[in-house]
Amino acid sequence: MKNLSLFIILLMIPSCVSKKYTTIKQLPDGIQLATEEKYLLENNQKKLLYKKQMIFTRNGRIKSSQTVDSLDKVLQQTEKKLWFIVERYPDKEPYYCKTRWKPNQRERISCYTRKQYKQNESIYHYNSDGSITKIVDNFNPFYTQYFYYTNKELSKIIIKDKNDTLIDEVLVHCETKDEKGSCLKEIRISTKTNRTEEFLFVPKYN
Image 1 (cartoon, rainbow, N blue to C red):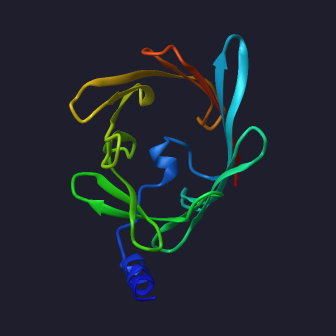
Image 2 (tube, rainbow, N blue to C red):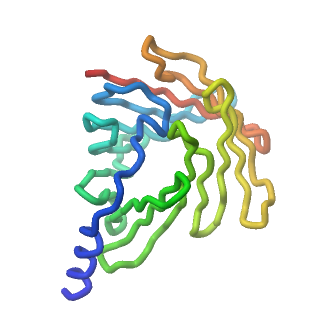
Image 3 (cartoon, rainbow, N blue to C red):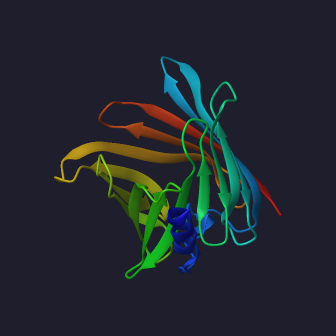
């Protein structure tokens, strides 16, 4: 009971407001609902990896979401609270994730269980326009992702380990946009494995 009380106090400590999801993803304002589907393209076949349904707040943050697999089995559910995000899973304890603003356009996102055990933590680095420039993972496997843009569109992601060894390089290309500028179909190709993934994004605006 004592640990639970301390945990609640920790979560209630105010932190600066995190970056908007729509800003990070370079999406237009006014998105009310959205569905994201991720597919693996292999041997002329298309395999659904997950489907994520998102409900947005007025200011472009995710209010709640649900991710399912190809059999409609729930993989994850999230819910935005005042100072933290709850992540729920079917086979393990919920995670409580808190964002803390740091100097020089950075955010530290840490996730805990109710017993205050830290499960993961990442440092997000942003460009001046709010897009991601780098994500540093403070837990195993300690990878760092570097994001590169061409004409203000994400074009490449480079992944390295803590020894600065190249793990993967992923080329990103938006094939289809809607009239508001949202990317509706994105292709990602790994130069290391030749793995090809397709992302379909269907937004609904206010």
